[in-house]
Length: 223
Image (cartoon, rainbow, N blue to C red; front, top):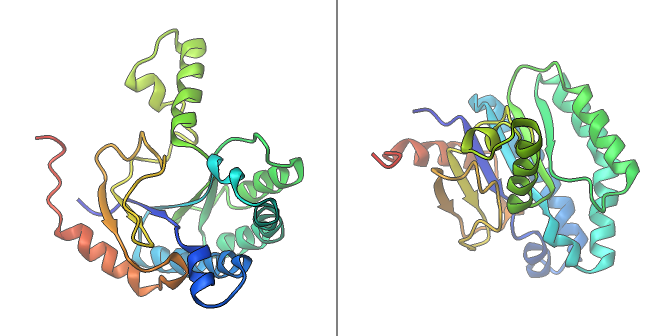
């Protein structure tokens, strides 16, 4: 089975910056460049879906200055990224809730999705202001109203962007070995790969390594 959906928990931006004697914000700036490089590599490799966990609902607990910088970085870059993706036939989707996100950024995110809506190549998903438990709770709530029952099937069809398939491989950087709420429903039978390097240290060649590692796994799905 070929790799259809790769998930990356982009961890270690701040630690990378600290070890390189830089402010935290430089780690996030470098992390964004890394995302762009990996997106290009994933598209070249023909991976249909790649998802980056970039900002969780718990990340609001960080220092206010850091959070404000991340939000401003997203505001200033999201449309440019979408236009670049559209030029390369790459679709962009944002998964998460609107709570706490300022209306300007929410509007820009919607515009970015529209810019790439007709693209048919690789789909890039950003989990932004995202929590895995919240996604399932939101889906269950909608299922009760829309379908009158909660089942795996009714929850699945009400997940954020339900057209996005289950994860095949989850990669986490910076030596940490946990999901931190990342796509809990879609990660049920995913393979896992934990890398010691920080996210800003990832390179395009890592996509090939990840594909090779995935191809070496024997997925049984409980059988």
